[in-house]
Length: 437
Image 1 (cartoon, rainbow, N blue to C red):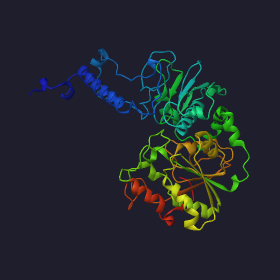
Image 2 (cartoon, rainbow, N blue to C red; image 1 turned 90 degrees about the horizontal axis):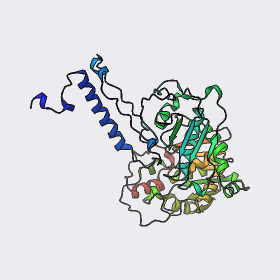
Image 3 (cartoon, rainbow, N blue to C red; image 1 turned 120 degrees about the vertical axis):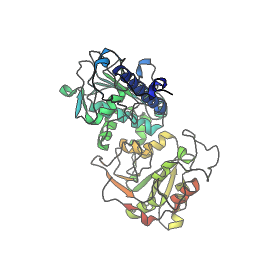
Image 4 (cartoon, rainbow, N blue to C red; image 1 turned 45 degrees about the horizontal axis):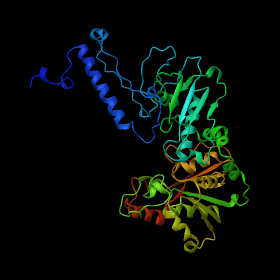
């Protein structure tokens, strides 16, 4: 086959216009591949307007390309967050309200506009309560840091209505003054992904993976009290604020069940037994083994333990806790709570001493807590609002063990193997860190 007979995308480009067209093919292929590979994830907010989502397409080849002498390939800027339905890849526009495109690694980007800057946060359509609260807080942190004027919380579904009043969700932020419209570098990537094409003063996203980087837990805590706490239903607030004299000496443990234990994400009752030979959910290896709870109880002298878990009670540590006093001889009273979501969330929020699981539910409860004094953690949940930078009234105890998701020998990666690991892991291999990481 002669070179002239070869398809365009494998022939050596011979002229400026041909090189431009080859670049277009490459960019379009990369763009649509990224879109189809990532565009239909569970985190996608569903927007009703057709202009809410777009792909950045290369401009048509023209005379300028025929005369250019540059051979440098165009840089296709695809951020890891480009799959959100509300996001778009970098684009060019002649709008008088357009922003300067945020560049990764730059100090900040300024949005020169006199119009109201709005951030729309989509939450409730996907994920469960902890995820949805996380979306609201990530969006609020983004809005605060880009000095927006207004936040609209589009939160009408999922589990949020079980704990929140979802009526007026339009929030006015304090006047940002001369800093209005300045996008700090830690929010550049999120701003690119959330920026609306035809509404350049509006940012819209599910704000799950699309968020500002490095936001301290203390800031999420502040935002939670300022904006999320007022949305809680009155009965949830009353439950949280009800006096509890025994809370000071009680250890509250959250055991994540349901989706990690061979159930559907929203299933309340197991439809079939656990297949013990099936591959275990990989996040289970990031949760605390049962013996970590034993270490905490012994070292910090707790005599009262409240275990909050889902109604399926499938977590391997449920049966382990039931046998704890008899097996260890510890004088400890263990109580289980498997109530409604609102009641369980209340129990977590009002706790003074809490062991959080690899779950955004207990992480969100900790951020919303007025009473929390101690947080015990092995690993922070993925996309968590908790991190090592917490508010001054709480202390954090983090635990280390050599067993990980990738290396957990001699335990195999089945449900039988992970249950054995949870219940028998050598407590002497678990150490409290001297500093949080």
